[in-house]
Image 1 (tube, rainbow, N blue to C red):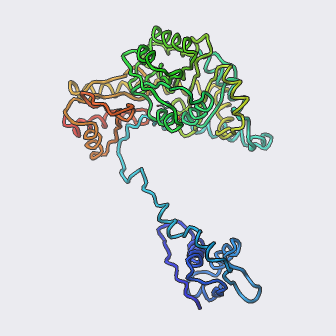
Image 2 (tube, rainbow, N blue to C red):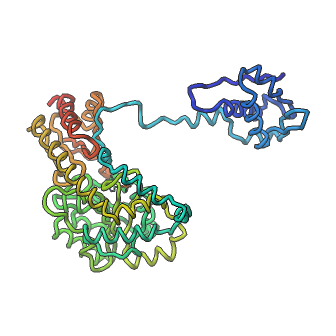
Image 3 (cartoon, helix red, strand yellow):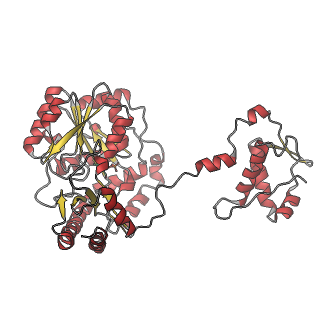
Length: 471
Ligand SMILES: Cc1ncc(COP(=O)(O)O)c(C=O)c1O
């Protein structure tokens, strides 16, 4: 009998038949098991390896199905003759295995408290309502939901989004102007295709690094524009040759300032004169803790120059991956002529569940509840910082949203601040990555998201940071 000696790896969850099949396939590919060799009978190999005949049978069937072996009735299973020069082009399983063992970015670090700004409160997610509404979408009368839907997204959901945007953000649009997509980055890629790459795009500096990366990867010439206390600097914008600008006017990311009306009007005027476009990313304006929510730029625009973007990642949950664009009419025409070929990226089941969730008023109730909860967490964060770190830090951007910046004045670098917190199992995040180029701020700034933490964790986290940072 030829030697078949796989080394079982019980630490993997891979079934034995898969391990045996991969072993034999590899041996055939590297020529250890020669063409036309007869493989041992199932019974013999099962006894030899101490495993069931069924395991051998399934592995052999898979090899036959893929053409590595042929089964001759009542004679046995034989290795197929494949030309050597074709075989050597195949990736070897061993080699393949090694190559696919990439380093896991989520190192083994188990943190106690994670101040990640993308996290939201999960304890108050309306699990049972969401389950009930998902079930509603799964009845056979609605079996069409199991097929691919409209490229722009479900019309019913777009209708609800347009109503919601008008009431809460003063955005004026019809459902036809809305394009749903799986996340802000995907929608930015779509926008790059729609707007073209012939002229530079301006971005806030600092600004959201994930969007900057998409622009770069799309081959866009980027012009970083500095910000002041009111947001993007219009004079610097005028000096650049950009015709498209990406901004976060309702809660500048990461600084958190709100663009006042005078700056908004200046920005709109710049855009009109340039015959350009403003991409308004309104990612978390639902959570404003002082005063009234600020109406959107889109609502002030009379020249069809503003592209509005929104997301349910903060107002509901980030894993749902439902974000959307509101395009001005001239761009929606272009989209419909050239880009409807791209299929919708969000599951119809999620879209329809969200549609009912909005239509039956659950979303507004959820946002109102979360606003109160986040306001409380926000207060606890600010008062813990005041209590434990007074005089040693400065808080930036404390009026809205789910994160703040902390300017730390203890002499440590940003890297040292993050590492020392890490050692005490608290995860905090850099601000420097949101700058276009390395900056040497007088004091480093740390980004603290609080949405996903409990009130107790927030207070504890700040106490630990005080110790880690020796302040
Ligand atoms: C500035 C900014 N825009 C948009 C988003 C939302 O991204 P997505 O819609 O891909 O979840 C975030 C989320 O953290 C953000 O910080």
